[in-house]
Length: 138
Length: 138
DNA sequence: CCGCATTTGTACGTATGTATG
DNA sequence: TCATACATACGTACAAATGCG
Image 1 (cartoon, rainbow over the protein chains, first blue to last red):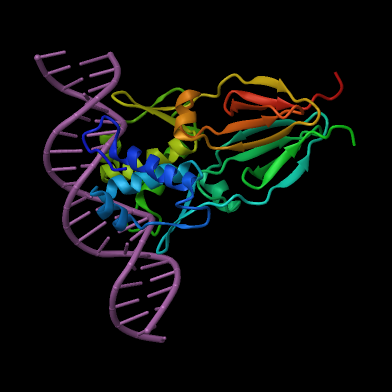
Image 2 (cartoon, rainbow over the protein chains, first blue to last red):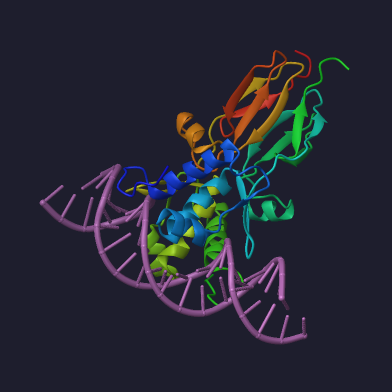
């Protein structure tokens, strides 16, 4: 598998797909480190811009997480709290603003679930940590 | 209001906040065009990279949408279909993969709502077009 | 505590490709 | 055909965070 710089598909999209494949195949399992930008740049013979855009794509999808001075990692599935919905609730989702993302300590690419209760009160939840549940009968 | 290149806050973050303010204040209402990259670059005396990164931030938040050859626009609130949840449903949200985003024709920065019904069947919804509802009694 | 290597972040430049009107 | 605008992709340089010896 290699990258074709003359393809109609942008180099960075090709690299992103290549990394997705490596992640799904188990070559880069959850929790493992993604090769550094310079390494990917050298290995695939592409510029650092293309590498950064590829990783940026995966970050926006919530697939990887990046820390300055350290590198990027494949994000792991977090244990999810199950939250019971109350009758009359309305549920929606959106991306948090930068401020909200910082306040809630969310990784990039993680939406927020918004629950408006029957009393009109609004609760926000990190979408990677909860599952909302409409209980069957109990 | 201006941009301080010597601030500890990156130029592109400053510009993003500045544009957010202009949007919230009504200076750039929903549906209106964001000034072009070159214009913002000139107006604020910053590089095109910084402008692009600022707009990229807002795009990832679902605040603006960009079309090649046209420019960027402030996204408008779409009419939302109200979808009734069935007892036993579980609801979560995440960002779509590139493929899913293309298939569902989603703008950047729009999560998907995932509903697993009591029968185990999974439905995906564009988060900017639906509200899930746990009906009170009807 | 200090210095060093590694890695990502920021920011500039240039050039060319592609979509739109 | 042409101008405009964004997209891609290469380069450079320096800043900032981290980990380690």
